[in-house]
Amino acid sequence: MSTNFSLPDVSDPMERHPKAPAPGDPFRLHHDLCHGCGVNAPGGLHVTVYAGEGFTTTAEMKVEEWMLGGPGVIHGGVLTAAFDEVLGTTPLIIGVPVVTGHLEVDFLKPIPIGSTLHFEAEVAAKERRKVFVRAVARLDDDPEPVAKASAIFIEIDLRKHYAKYLDAAAQSRP
Image (cartoon, rainbow, N blue to C red; front, side, top):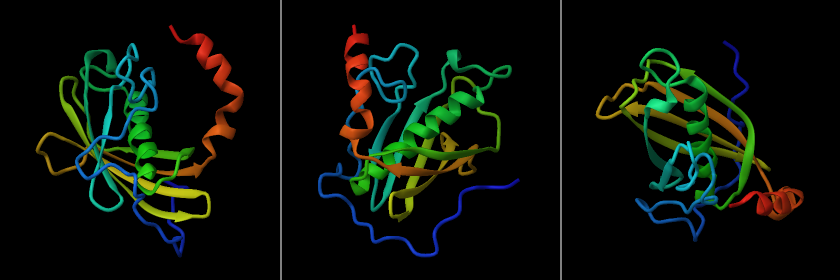
């Protein structure tokens, strides 16, 4: 299997952002209808990401019946979306808003419906606008990962990046 994820030889200096949540505290929502973290998103993942120590985060997600893929297990696309939410939130620990540039997931074991996934993620490196993040997912107290992911995110200017979409988003809100 080939991979597009390799850490740069030298990372740009990183430091925890002074406004990052304290370890154990949640990151605030993108918005209440975000498919990944929104509390009011119908059929959303409802993932809450918590700041960890250093450049790390944790998160949990209940694997619900609507997430069904194969018989009795989560759909791979749903798991990928959950990783995207966790990995994409993690760079906020260093104060960098990002969008996904590349994401890869290794599906290691079946993940049963009714279980709870526990994610651990870390910012591994930064190179100019690229932020390299990796994560693992485990079930309950099992030390063996059921999946792992790595991603390259691209730092953005939020106002410029989403400027042309804001009017449409405001009109679609209930």
